[in-house]
Image (cartoon, rainbow, N blue to C red; front, side, top):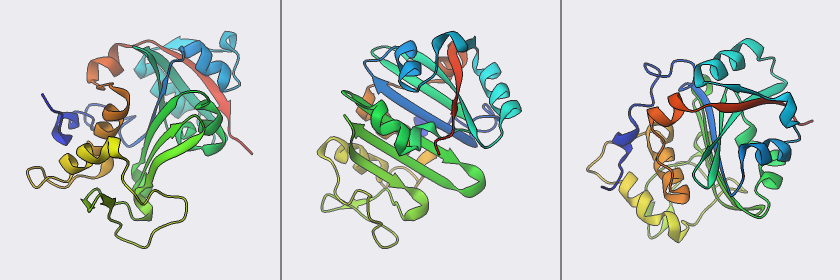
Length: 216
């Protein structure tokens, strides 16, 4: 079956009250959680294993605006980085080197500021990105992204062929227009990674967790 935005309606504040309103998911191909931790400059021996509930509670209790708490878990050939109240996956000083030799996909949402971000990076090169606060609109015309506001330098103007079909499906009149975090971001990430995020994946995984100091 072909996924639609509705397939991700389970990701809500009702089911994930400490995650859905302030999250960042980052997918990196070909790495183990230990290798990802090392690329982040964190010692594996300084990390601990946690459930999602423990991860989110620790992220909130330890939040100081300077250090970013994360959890990493292997999903097939990928590693999934999960953050509550974090933004490692949209910090270019971090994700550009983290993508070296591989593919990185990330999406971020912060409800209090109504911000959606999305990145697709191949070996240090940005293939596709958007910032919802800067005019992203998930409909296309003549193969190009249509912006509600003037184009921002550094953001994608043309639609990569790999995402065109998914973007057309997102913008289909069959489905109501949804904010990126309400399903479209998950669909784009699924298209680029082959990973279907489910409640069971998030809730039943054990994460390798650590802290990265905020880049200066």
